[in-house]
Length: 303
Image 1: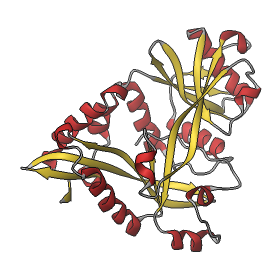
Image 2: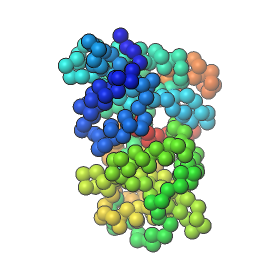
Image 3: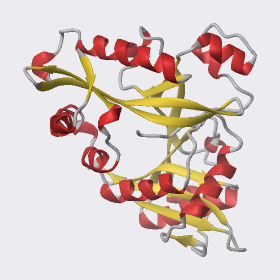
């Protein structure tokens, strides 16, 4: 039977996560359970009073087709190795998605293996790409306006301005960016902000050193100058950097020598097709059609 987690289950769920996601952690799991985890987000299957399988689903507000809608994100489906191949994964997904169908319009998941989720109505709608940019690719500039001192109001403002040309992103506020700064710090990363000559924020970037490579896992910029200033600063720290952006951002046109790789599989499930069609006024046969908008998609969440 699938039930909501109890307070006493948290440590068992944490242990399952640590085992399942050790290859892709970097301190995130510990931070997630200290900062974000709530019993009401976790669904568990128990045997002999022990958690053997769990799923965590977090609520979100998403901007889609110009409207803010209730959505959720599945951030972890794990089963203890001794209890796999018993149908726990399918049972959890069926129960949770039935609940989603009565509560929210859209559910998303970042899938390591997209094939696992297609039978539940999910489909891939968005990927990101990585560009390897080298020192010679970016003109050297003065570091004026670059700071690691953060003003969360400013981050909200520049994020809102930047994402106004996109669709499908989650709504962020000051509390989000405050938590993000703690999350990045917990994993050994940094957030830098870029200001223009009038003292207005023009961009920011989330930086991690991954296997010795400086990686910008998120970069937001209002113009090419702020983009170049952020990259110039990072290339003073390392001779090459990896920059992650949406597929719609054609940075390879600016950096023609950059190596480009595609990354990630954001999958979406429309939980209430009829309600979706009434809300937005158009019919769709596939998830891709439902997510097609006048603007390109932009999405970069971890939980």
